Length: 238
Image 1 (spheres, rainbow, N blue to C red):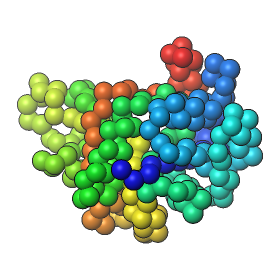
Image 2 (spheres, rainbow, N blue to C red):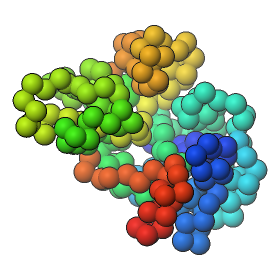
Image 3 (cartoon, rainbow, N blue to C red):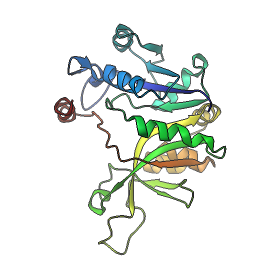
Image 4 (cartoon, rainbow, N blue to C red):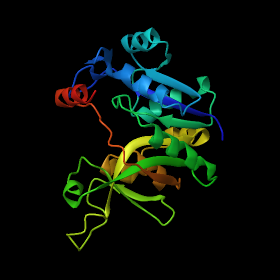
């Protein structure tokens, strides 16, 4: 199996919860918790935090972590971690979200292992949701082919299910991505695509350009910290 690295994009600015990544979560910051849980998963040869801010850099270095200081302006987390690629010695690059402090070993291992299939360009996670949950446009839905590769992602309900009592037809996309190194480099140099612009989902740029995204099922429910309420829930869970 080729080497795998986790790169954690960590942008300091945030809208709904200012400077959320440096907020306290049980005696450590959110970004420190994310870094440590990613390391503790034991899946990766290297784990990096890629940040635009000296405070985050200091916090990670204080716990012995590895940091790449990026430019401030990037359109996405994928663009941010792509800037650090020249410093990373790995063929599989996993984009771990900086605001998700409780990483799951099995999900990360399953994600990396699918690259044993040479046809896979990118991999991501999916989990079952109910029909009621599928109504929420903030939850991104995905439909897949017989091999588990994504056909489409949408904020709308997909597929349209005429049997409203069937709750087993909906998959939520869990936004963690693994890339072959050369695919990440190519992806971030591509112009924003039409469907990506309509749905505001960057993964559609990959599909529109012919890349294969293998979707891996997970039972792990991620905790993403976007608001003060999310932070309080994370503190209680911890």
